[in-house]
Image (cartoon, rainbow, N blue to C red):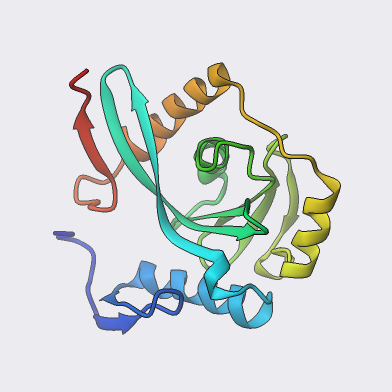
Length: 187
């Protein structure tokens, strides 16, 4: 149970239709969902909320959820990583997620605190735009995909990215964070 996360009641998730806890963080995630569906033109069926990304490092295993992954034409195309506070501290773990979540490099990465956003080039990590309004709309994302070939992630790179994700999102998480699942590898 999240001892210091205020539960304000229950709400209906816009993407899944499930009833979930109403928290300050969830309100920002729902704000993002409304932005994606109603302003950016994404279909609910293209948005996967809380997709778990499995990482294994030195016998430690974890599932870390990506806030949203948008899939266009069968290709994971945009990853959104939400977290309160500073955006810059979330760039590196979001890029690691984008290299582990789909078996290929997700080309567009959005880091947001719900009030603003940084849009990153998944391959280079460079900030390409700022602000929620700069999140690419569905048609723009389709154009970006048509210009970019599918890039696989080298296994050695994936191993390094797993270490980064483990350090930022697992080892350094709040003790009451129940969104990350951890276990020991029994192999």
